[in-house]
Length: 196
Image (cartoon, rainbow, N blue to C red; front, top):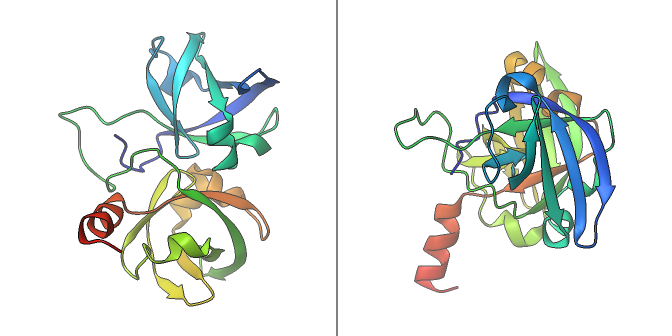
């Protein structure tokens, strides 16, 4: 389990096609120095397994299911990604419950400055919109965020403080970019238990 508090941005070193999808090597010496084979890591909010480790880098395999539900297929060498290691059982819970099971991809529809902060509007797939509520939580590219507004079109907005803009890939996003979305898992369970 993750919390959506990004620990570092890593750099994509290689992207290679495999029989089942892609193998991506990511470097970030501070966060990845003690990773072990089989450990989990969230990359732009997608929970992946370390298949090779060493020298402050990790290799992960991304299968077609994950490629079709995320923006990881768009990664290129030299690009940056948000990274988070799983929360330890005795760790601090600073964000919200994040599984690393991306539900779909949204599109940045607008960016407006509000002083040093930025308000970002994201178009969301209609099937996911019912899980997004004003002042609720959502994960965007692995970052736990508070929804500040929702629309019927469907879209939602978030406001990013300067720190978040500096330490996550969201600070690099532009209109038209695709972002990974994970909605609140509790809402999905409630819907399932209550019946649609």
